[in-house]
Image (cartoon, rainbow over all chains, first blue to last red):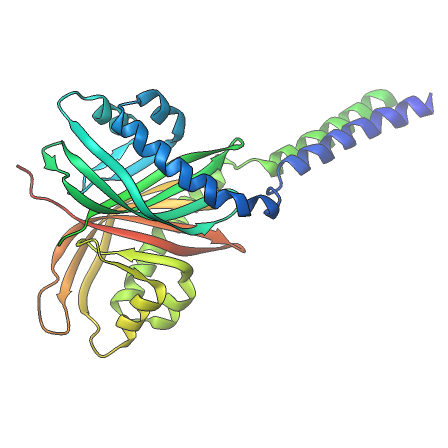
Length: 155
Length: 155
């Protein structure tokens, strides 16, 4: 009978230890691959914007996504997706160049890129190149876009 | 009775680590307040040309993007602040700070009022919506990116 009590006491401890392990930061070994992954995610993000693929954007954006547009407008996830969906807004071209992953860890990446845009959105003419900081976070095992700050490069 | 006591103890052991693993709403609110204070402290340090603080607070990956799209690394920006041609800032106040917290990274958006002039006396006065990225390393928050967006006059 004592053995049964002993086993009963040990089982939850094993479960508890597993819970602690799940709460730990992922191994640093995965960081070396993260930069390459993030560069690909940058392209996926802008391709989705170009193709008005709001499903991919909803999948990619974190729930607390935030973006500052040229002109200073601040939009959340829903507002950004609604703008992409809006047929009165045009995006003839959008692509990133010079992707510079400034910081990467197992669950955070910050990059700087030069994004070329030809289009019109919210009454703001986006034709030209923009300097952009983009932030990615790993949530529930996958990378998601957390936000972007965009400013036009003046000649 | 003994069986009940063992089960109760086991249940307590099982749930305690789960509580450690999660981010509580209370700690999140406290962290948001800490980050808002940090935003003020950061801009105050830049206004006072407190290079020692900036040197410590800016991550090596720090990049600052001005409203004209010009980007400066940590070294480039600190060299300007400590050099003879540093700007003279009389007001650098962030308002309406919003914190978007994602574990070890936070995006802050704020409305910053800047008053001052460059080394040649040209006015730098303006209103900006600013995208700030801070990362937590070894328990301390560090700035890693800033995009300043001049607020366009509403049409």
